[in-house]
Image 1 (cartoon, rainbow, N blue to C red):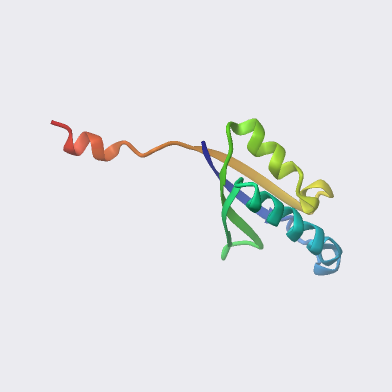
Image 2 (cartoon, rainbow, N blue to C red):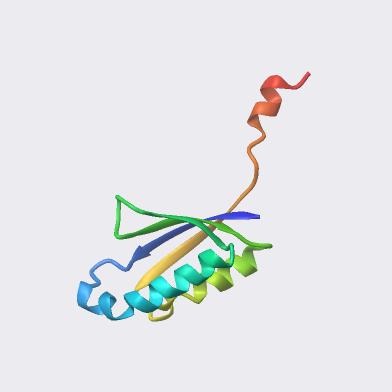
Length: 96
């Protein structure tokens, strides 16, 4: 299954609280990418954070992966995970 991750740094968090965790955060994100869970990550333009596409067997596995991120563990990031499913709208247009 695919999931959409919407993560953002908690409003008002100064950079000096984030910087000490960036190496560990990047390492864990790389591990999740290498494991095939993170498929893509993109910086957000609306807030300080990321949007990501995840691949996992179910929501529990996706949540467990996100909960392992250091910035989330220390409460500097919030995250929402949305389950995705294939779009079937074209089928209605082109079904015979």
